[in-house]
Image 1 (cartoon, rainbow, N blue to C red):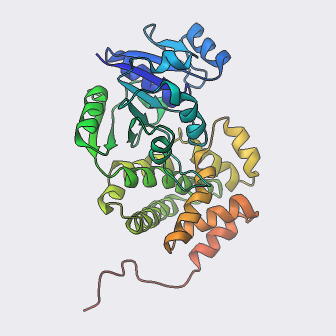
Image 2 (cartoon, rainbow, N blue to C red; image 1 turned 45 degrees about the horizontal axis):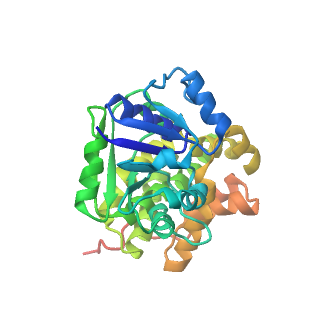
Length: 335
């Protein structure tokens, strides 16, 4: 049995708490929002996970020291825009070599740092690692099978976390390519916004397949320029996560994209979703990374134009379709 502290009582943090508690671990679920965590503790249910019981063994707390004290793993599950402030807040409570697992997906807009980069900067005493993959909270909380990946700098840490999470419904692989995992996990949210816009415009399965395929091409091109392993982008944290986020009814990024595609404003769409839409925040960072590394990412560019420049989704599709003609794979040569 491990002692687990989870910072963030959103749907993902709560789903992980439920999963880990059912496996027999000691789980403490923390939120900086005292009223929110007290409501969860009292009702034993999360308002965005209706019908899912929260086991009595999960402690619902708001005390920083209690979250981290003697924890084998501290999980950072706040929205990515709050990772830095939360890590800084918890710095006095994190012990030397304590494992801190980042499970949010996003790239910081100003610094272009990944979640584990931020963690290592704010918590230099900790061992930072990451968990990612196709794992909607709505399904994980109900015990529906999925497979994810744990990334870490050293094999021992990755395998330790793998053993804690592994179950018949939650298969865990390991990887040393933390940066590739996090770039894929962040940019798939941007592509999912585009996929939702496609549905909102009334386009079909062919359009969706093209977006997913060309989306993974953009992600892998950037990853290669950033010295990530290309295989990562065709695994669970790249293609796997991209497919589920673009196609699932549970995807908040897809849902926001649908509303934008139907003509709703960006802020109005985000308000309608009632949860943080990570792709909106990662879009600017993705475009900055593309320009920094000289990588062509036309879908990411058009999503930015829609979100921040007032371009219509239909005009963005036209411009994507009418770009200069090219071969699909430049590496494949004519005879």
